[in-house]
Length: 299
Length: 333
Image (tube, rainbow over all chains, first blue to last red; front, side, top):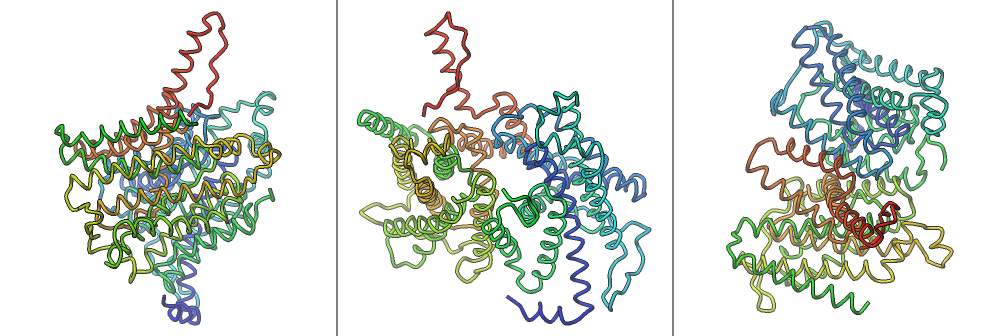
């Protein structure tokens, strides 16, 4: 415990700005991963245990594309669209075969893919840490906000995550596709009976959820070291975010991600060993006091 | 009931004799170690199935009680002030108390919320182990070895006697679990799983029944942790990490949750695949993953459950050859 360091940092603007910006990018990555997880769970009822592995794969796809083309936008596209395609195929080939079975069977299937994908990455890219490095266009001196240095890439990450989150909300709340998705979450038989191709709908929902994980991985690639198994911790944090925010709520996922991101960045100063513990204490409190989450519908 | 008890005792005794004879018939140290692992993880999976399979409560935090058994037993033995049986009883008692407190909060919640809350408590326990370095050794684990002083004339320092000790403890615990499952209380738990409203109408206090199941499962999981701590001569924070609970769930799903010994089969399979594939290829995750995918997509249920359904449909076809009614997969174990 080093609470003096925590309060010391809070009273110095430069330090506070650095910690806030770190907390925000952790939170934004979490938001992208968790909203994909929550979308898939909300519509398909599947807890995609492999979602963390999808995040990892997105990062490695981005790394490969960047090394091939040297273009960061191509890397982002490879991570996001590559994973969208991967997710849709994964749903059609494997997950769709055990709908209606025990939810735990789906969990076991996804766990098997965590093992497989981690080893595939090990075989293709090696077990050691890989770095992508900051893309050329962002290799500029940091901005100074209230005396605290903030890399421009952080602002780009935050901006793109907010835009994607907004688009996701709009897409679900305002478009025909979103209407179908919400209807399918409510009553898939009726949606099918009305002539909607539910198989295609399910595959695209899984694809969109995977796209979000892949995009998060690609965005993380320049600022994180890549390693097989990097998806494990973000998976468990996404669960926390989903629970705290309320399952199926995008706004809730956003708020909870920020909360967890800031807890991580400030907690690493004040109580480095108990950061995980603090997150789980928050999760337990929410479950005990308001099981449906801060923004979830009351059950 | 009486006949069932005698049959279970007979089966348990036969299994124990078989297990104890394995070293005499050239089992080798490697096989003994493997069976001790299976016994420890088997108790974790079997006890979790009392909640998951029989009561319908999917706990994602069951390894907390496994770890609690390992750590409290290790700490008590390292203090040098108690004998093995006393430390054993105290560790199980402490774990049961912990399960009582956590369970009292958790069993109010349903389904996925229950799963997440048990997970949260387990991870808090894990964080406490990591943070309380002076007591637990933090992320290094409980170092310095766990002494095995002689008690009741039993010396556990030799590998053969230790193996026998583990097998005896395992068989006794499995028999206790079996009796719980077969008792009227066990049938009450099945009713709570299948139709909680009906259970309430019939005057069952589902809260207390679920809480009792939670405490019993936690206590038996702690015995698994004690065996593993003795075997590894230490306790490690990984015992309390969420992946350990995940593995226990996967053992149940792979082996089967409707047959009493299904989770044990799953534990043996997962441990066996882990042990033997690691020696054969460095990509054991890939091989294990593919085996699980094939099992899940091929059988769509646990292996023992699949065998049960297969045997039942065969029997039904034989008994009623003219009736083409499909086999109903029923509850048997």
